[in-house]
Amino acid sequence: MWIRLRLDIGWRDLCFGFCSSLLPGGRQVAQAKLEDLWSGGNNDALVCLSVRSGFDLLLQALDLPTGSEVLFSAVTIPDMPLIAKAHDLIPVPVDLSGSDFQLDLTALQKTVTSKSKVLVVSHLFGARPEMEEILKVARKHNLYVIEDCAQAWCEPEWRGSEQADASLFSFGPIKTATALGGALCRVSDPAILDCMRNRQAQEPVQVGRKLTCNICKFACLKAISTKPFFGTITALARRLGKSVDDILGGLTRGFSDDNLLAQLRQQPSTGTLQLLKHRLQTYDTQRIHRRIQHAQRIITRLELELTQPERINPQHSFWLFPLLSDQPEALISQLQQEGFDSTQRGRLAVVPPPTDRPGLNCPHATHLLNQTVFLPCYPELTDAAIDRMCGLILSLEQEKTGYN
Picture 1 (tube, helix red, strand yellow):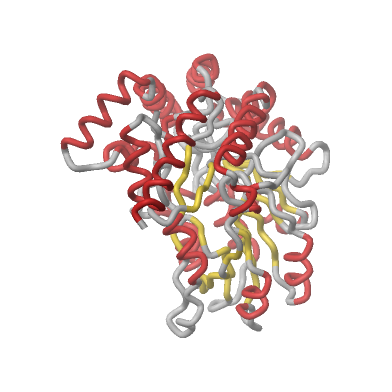
Picture 2: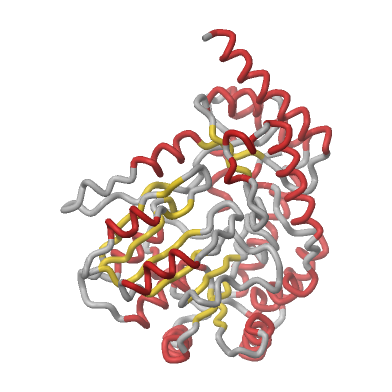
């Protein structure tokens, strides 16, 4: 089954969302209830259309001088540095370390300048890295620290590091506990939060039929992600010389490339607010526990504790399982032929360095992204399927060793 079609939402939730999308009015009350639920009485929450929207609102509220630098974990989705550029800011990558895509503190020290004002730390694939040392460096240089937790939500009690200035969580179509849209932001400074809230209040509300259409689309995608349909799609893709990503990838995109800011600058509809609140209150966290168990089984079967010790992280919830391979294309091809929805890269990219600082080209992040294969470990997989997948990976490794 294709990894992007393993939608973390059930048919009852889709029905609830469909009914919510048809209900008129009550948007302000729904927003207030959702933000109160998320903040737990701390009054530090704002619900937005997406993490990108929250990031855009943050940059508006910060009102940084033109030409200020926004430092990014080197691997992220391209829209994030594009938003910074739209604010006349300079996106600057910070290289990563290890095999788990974590920010390299030495690289951060070398990258920061007097023009650096913001640091965006991406928590990728379900990881929850320790922020203490990162925050020490950031505070030393007066950086405003934003956690991009779009891929990292795993339990209702966790809202990011309380010491970070802002933490952004996504509940878009392929995320954990998806509401097919919506994001929740925790912002520590009340003045900045108020500014974000006031600016968002001036934006148009996304039309309710957008959620209705999304529910219908993803209900169809959920149906065709079952094995018989998916096998047909895979066979069709091979015949056309394409991948499943090529055929279906665009269907899960939340925003197109055209006029990005106009798409981001909308308030979430009443239906989205109600569906997101419903998902947070009713989500079965046992699904995440099963996902983690599958990941631990992969680690044990492949003996990754020896070669990629960073995988043994008790804070990792494995939204995706990243596996380093020196022959990623061959591995993906073999796994897909056997019905496993492995993939590579997706929408992630390495942030390019500024033209006047070409030395910040982040070689380790580039190597990591090029060598990483994403393995499925979603809850629906059985232990037998996990073992068969690991067996295929080990067989390919043995073939390579024998050939050499």
